[in-house]
Length: 205
Length: 309
Image (cartoon, rainbow over all chains, first blue to last red; front, side, top):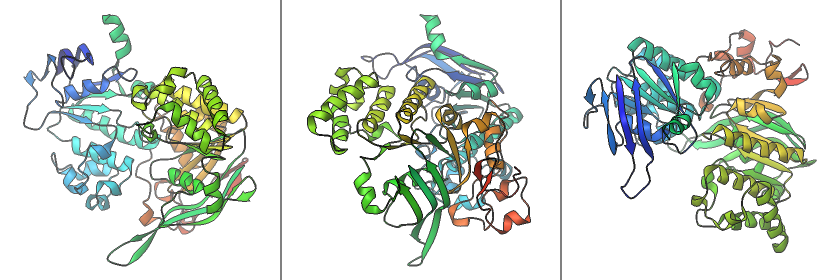
């Protein structure tokens, strides 16, 4: 269980709250959607859960333990722009080996060609590079996945291809997923339940 | 208004040492846009959508070779004519809000776009007031800098820079990704209005759903060529011709969400035959031997030898 209790966040004590009193429980193997207009803190929630940001108030636990501060985080985040999430000076094979080298089956399921492995990130298209980012995150240390607009930049076919692989992997390995998206039909297709941040904030007020 | 025939674009690149190689990124592409029409150009990244826009505007890098014809208002678009017309007769709505000058007030930027398109100074000021009003931007917004306005407002400013002049053809390059649905609908509505005023609009996007909301025709790009140019209505009425277009439609989350496995061939290893051949369930020996020529099937051009009328 990935558990966020009463999370609040602001960058500085003089600045406005970006997120206030947000709680979430994500069970293993569960797919939960997170939606709402821009500027309500969807990406901030993702970054808090994946340990990129520390909550100003509240706490996050993964299976009862706080998130590790130095070792591999069991909560992994996949971003909208893959070219910003990889080291531009590394070859793809090195990028993939950053976590735990993915199996050949996973590479094949994502349609990753062996010939891509020797290239640099700028030599792949956005859709191709996002497959690499997904393959890097899907390993046995990852228990929860935050997919922040993971396929918003991609065409419908690539979107369906990547999501089918991720959902199948998550089912087999009981990985919990938080899918952040603006696209209602996509969330309806993927998720067990969806949290709408605009109504949630409205309810609290 | 705009007619692109048999367009091919290739880049000369260095391979190993001083040996050069040709990378063909657009092959035998045809597309036509009439005034009053929104034509969506839909395809995955790397399919040549933005390169087409750059070829029309004449802003491809120096190592690009172009063959084929681009005809705008009855005359060939040669480099000199492109330099004269871009920003005036042909306007671009760029992909990202970061194309606005961060150090210049938005009112001045729209005014400058008007001046560059050939309006005299006072006339440009009037037109700026008019477009701000048209896109529900308060007059006070003119005094603000890009960082002070919201993403949705910045989108409207970008549309305003294209609408301020007398452009007949407007090219919108990925104007909607990552935006909230309300802002997407609004941006698309503005493009539709420009077409209804008699302009031609080319909407470049990977978002098929967004395209279908406003477009009259949808050109489906794949690995640098058009596989099919279908009417928007063909999608919902099940009248699609090419297997790839059908697959694209099926893969939407609100439809079946079933993808075609594999990926688009890279420009370095284009097959001799049909570009979609390695992923197509209908592919036969004939498909692998030669590129299918454009056929007119049920009133629309398509590159597939298997579609029946």
